Length: 463
Ligand code: SAH
Image (cartoon, rainbow, N blue to C red; front, side, top):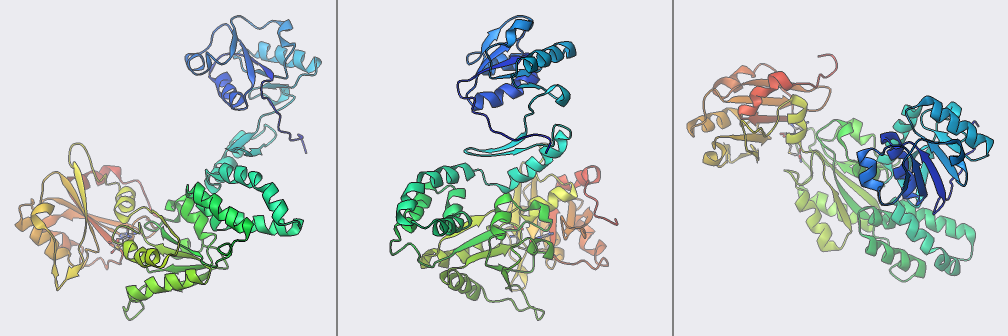
């Protein structure tokens, strides 16, 4: 091991910073979070440093002099004069004061790691000063996986330590208890911001009150986005990795499904080969039953559960049955497909509003408010519109939309199989009829489609 890791208590400790530029500012920010008493020696402070910390640091306005190093717990040099940095390092090391020269590991007696701060939880990452980019990348990964309210959870756990010790004298029992807490519904309550409920749940589990171990699980209704697994949210991924069982339908790709906990049972509730979907009522009931067995149930939906996703219907029964649930938004197809196709849904020059509609056929006809859809300066996004496309185009033209209005169809948007077809309203359905188009597809109509030519950026492999 090249360095010995320690965490230093700097609260009210005198620390010296030589240099007053932006590099010094970055380090000062961190030291101030640790409540250090900071003296800055520099002929000038940069504006940001003066505005942010002018009142909370001591500024000695001059060049560094050899005698300056005495009386400090830590010294940092961040000037742009190599000779000064080197001199600070030599003097500090001769006086046995830990010293850091920013970005020059060979002049440092300590280095500062990349950190993930969920105080009181603090994670430090170091590559020995040699590959800071790698440390930053690791940091980003950890940031993504550790919920923002982890610190709250840790602080609460530490407050309840004694209470648990009294209630549960055996150390092994306590460890198992905490393991269940940090991986279960109590922690999830914290992460979703319901701190008070979380504490109550924790307290009742410690008290072993009758409600403590009631076996009701929880349902997480999660938006899986339009296809590209990278478009999942952090929360979606975290909950997926805790699932006991996952109910999913046709729009959820294998790539996304594979990100669920490996041991989770998978239940397909989409359309069967005979085009026969599991009835909605049955899905709703299934969610309730599984949760009542004490399971953590993930209900994965394509896109966003609240946009043409029947999310509302699925949670209604949960709410009535007293089953706890959370809803995680996802990127809806309109947003994902438009972005990956290079079509801005709004644009100051072309569209001041945007409308999402379903083109699902009702009684054999497309049942839409045509005058509203034909309003100028707006973008219309049609979900489930492929079958009704000829009738949609015809109706729009009949209600005054220009025959040359740009239109796009995005097939399997955001995936490696994405294809984008563009054309004009009057002959579009004719022009794509030989393309053997596969579901799912999204239709976008509006002037903004004309921008696609210049803005298309996403190139699926092999295209
Ligand atoms: N809740 C989903 C929509 C479900 S309705 C969401 O928010 O996206 C299903 C329709 O969504 C499909 O018929 C299609 O029109 C659209 N859709 C979903 N994913 C898509 C994708 N990757 N590419 C194109 N269209 C998609």
